[in-house]
Length: 207
Image (cartoon, rainbow, N blue to C red; front, side, top):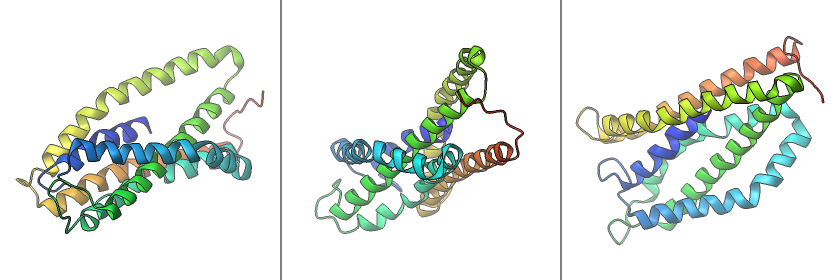
């Protein structure tokens, strides 16, 4: 999940700045989008996490959070249509701004639900004497994926949004389609783990 999230976090600003296939907006407008998404994250992360955990439980929360996190990026290209007809170049329409704030805010809130649930489940899956080791391995894997994420994002953006190999529209949908597919793979992995848990094959320490 870290890998998919980092790719999206790196690819999104590049998409916004891209003059070919992207929104072609200024850094100021990108900051506004991220600020709006951050506000949604601050307001909704705790109540949404509490509601999901209380109603559906730990492993269902992982699944819901993963479904609504990276896969939602497939909707981002819609902002190109919402941003048509802006009066000033390099500016962002209100409809595109609100749409991107909501999509990215939902992505951030859902990521929080997924990561928090995974962290709790990881610590419950082993005895207390093994938690430090498991968390160390988890952090190592997360660090490797976070390091490789920007490289993959830069490659995808330059390859798909350049307009030299594929058309601009095809490139945009391909970019966020690939990112969404990576997110869907995360959903599949979480589903498999949930089946193991329900089947009793996964040991869970309740303490």
